[in-house]
Length: 153
Image 1 (cartoon, helix red, strand yellow):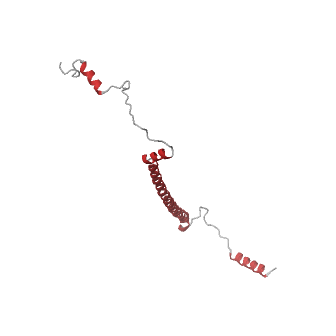
Image 2: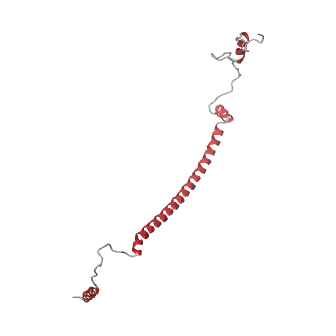
Image 3: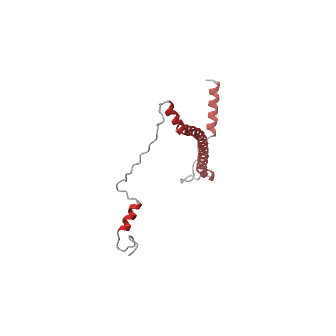
């Protein structure tokens, strides 16, 4: 047997000699000290405090991430607004009547007409009554003394 094994045997023998069997006097429940009664409460309190700290830290991290996303979105919005302004300017340039006239004359080969003639159509759409027609109709008929129609009763 090795020296180490002999030392372990001696230590176990000594510890066995120090042990004693203790018998309970009462058969009822074991009465514990006040500190042992508080142990579950302390454990639950520690768990709740840790959970609260974790929740606060999680909220802070989420808030920081939202701030970064918001800054990124602002940057993208600024770039998009600048691009929009460029496009609006380009549309204004392309839609100008001077540019369209130059394009029509130069690239499309269009020319100005020798004379300008206007044609006026004297057509009245069906179902539309002009105010003059309604007034003429009202004055020509008597509507039974309602105050409309001819001025004299």
